[in-house]
Length: 525
Image (cartoon, rainbow, N blue to C red):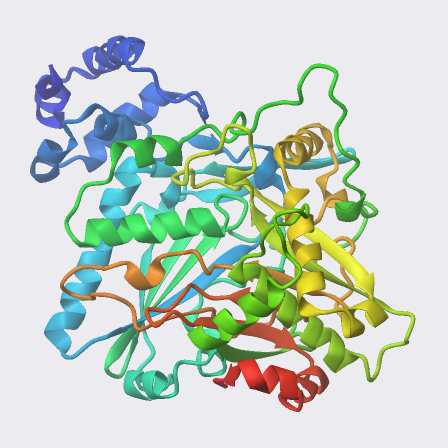
């Protein structure tokens, strides 16, 4: 029956009416996922006749691949309630050595082939994000539609020659690739969080820019944050790596990756009141002008640091001192320990110029997938993040022990639970004006810090096939982003954690003169 779908038969016999009838019958048995909107059959016909070739048709025999081809270009996908805030990009740059022209050609070919294959499983990766329904008290709705520029054979892979304006790959590796050497204005086609993209600026779901430098390739992956959070971005990169190795994607992961964003979080239970969520609310921005674009340079300077494996173990041991089996907090993680240490040392660095009565807050991005009573599979690529907020007085930050403060952070994480996730989902589903909702609504850049941890991501272990292999480093390129923004990079193969952070020059200087900071942290640049 599948052979009747072949474009040869449709074109030669002029059977477009039969073609549509076939799909009507086919999708009665195998329904299209209901989060795709629009005239499916029109696009089935258009895409199949124009795009499927004799050579690649035989690879589309499974039900999943056929459905993906049929719904590929031009169809809409909802981002769900959680995808309606943070119109920005998640950025990551991976470094690979390239020895010669032959390897360079093979690497680009491998990336383009993988991109063509992954959109068979996730057609929306080749789309763009638009806003509809803005006005009359509504911030509108973000959704994915087709994007003609990514309907090419290279899909979302862009190749850029940077040999004349970037350091040589060997120099980057020798210096341990600090972000200060990775100029985002050259290496990244998108701006990162917290730069909110205006409604009228084109927002591709994904751009994978292969930057060619002397002796290497710097692969910058940009994914729209409302479409996929950092955990979804990790899944996308790792699955791309699988395809670069010539492997097939696991059906369970593809099913979860395409799960409906409108129903991924359960509703509130009968009679259950939503949590107030005051910490992420602020006045409406509907009446204000959109941000200047492109964004102006920030006052922050990006620096890269390293927590060696031994330092992580020492900080974890110190942070565990007040934990016990009798207390409500029986343990703190290594992530808690590092996060607490970063926050407290920044507070100490700022204490010389802040009023004594100041407060300081740490905001931590939390993967909500495992916070629900029925957890969401790690293969879900959509947005499923909340933010944990912990605020103390400056005096407390300066005088309490690392263990006492790490316990506070662990308690803050425990408040992001099933009820909190469903309350957040409910708020975003029911609030027309989502400009009143922002993770950093309560944040003050001069006193607080926002931490995002990618430590658990397995990017250093991801093999991109014979042409690329495994990355030498995982970085976020230097871009004009906000002050007090920090990223903990994936655990290295040596067990280290690298920190990339934007602070004022005054705060950076104070940190470099902090004996406790210098005891545990190496400066990379």
